[in-house]
Amino acid sequence: MQAWLTGSVSSFIKLVNIWLPVLLLVPLFINLANAADGIVFPKTIAWSAYQTGTGGYSQAVAIGNILQRKYQTNLRVIPGRNDVSRLATLRAGRVHFSAGGSEAIYAQEGILNFASKIWGPQPIRVLMSNYSDSCSYTLVTATDANIRSVSDIKGKRVTFVQGAPSLNNAMAALLSYANLTWDDVTRVEVGGYNASADAVVNNRADVVGGACNSPPFLRIEASPRGLTFPELPHGDADAVARVRARLPWYVPHIALEGPTISSEGIEVFSSAYPLLVGLDSSDEILVYSTVKVMHQNFEAYKNNAPGATGWRMDRQKFGQAFVPYHPGAIRYYREIGAWTEEAERQNQRNLRRQFVLQQAWGNFLPSAPENYAAFEQSWLSVREKALAEAGMITLGEGL
Image (cartoon, rainbow, N blue to C red; front, side, top):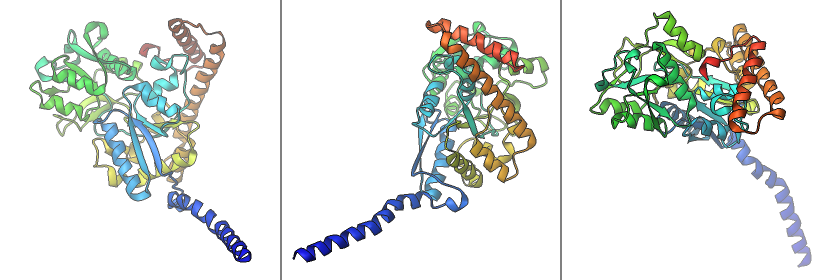
């Protein structure tokens, strides 16, 4: 009996030694099913994005459907109410990437909400950019407010999104097209992006800003007030220069997609939205896999969310980027011949800019004021001086 028991235990141990490693590798093989193509995903990845109902959120969901269907990977899209919340989850490691907007640039720069002691310049890295037939941010007005040009906004009620300096700074830049500032309008504070559209529908505001094809704008169009896009004609060189002095990553753009926009389009400005970003510490294989899948499966998701056509490879503006790209993304772009010498030169300039900013931040912290307001004011002064000495644009007009 003892001999039989000893033999059985011995056999069991042998079986465990043989099969346990195999069983432990099963999940790995599931996740590495496409490793032959260099595509490797964990079972679950997470992105932060704008709130539900926005174009960026809808696009992330559409891309997530591809990941689930073809790669058995679940993409969790976590909506962020404001700029800080979208990037705080990225920095804390709760999401892998963020599909946001200009807040990534402000975080790189260490300005606005990112000028505080707990933030400072961040090592943001780009994966991919979306330049769609829509636009990243423009002015939308209630038709019954009788606003036909930007200058007509003077004295009107304009939404100001709490905790979203990237949106509010974009609004200020577009107001500057007509030499207007926040002092020339009635500021209506709202709690989030969706709340801006609600304020117009409910006749609390007359003007809101956002992506041309943003789903919340459909509510304005369907309301008794109606929706109008005031154009920003590109022929006024001085007006264009004023906008770009505040937001150099915004370029003149013809928008073809959005409620009430005709097939001829309208003249607006645009930047990348969404701008899919990670950090310099983001996993290179995951970055490579994400970019490759988004490019190779473009046809499968391009019509499944408003503005998704802007992820096309021929709309990637590497040479005009203001934030450096992640090495994992560059690796893929080089493989397909999309990464040019011009792109590399611009990327090196952007890396140099981040180095100057982070070096200035490191030198500033040991003797920084404790008072919050004094801290921010002192940092912005140090930052502007460091960039000026390096011969780089300071964005001083945009703060």
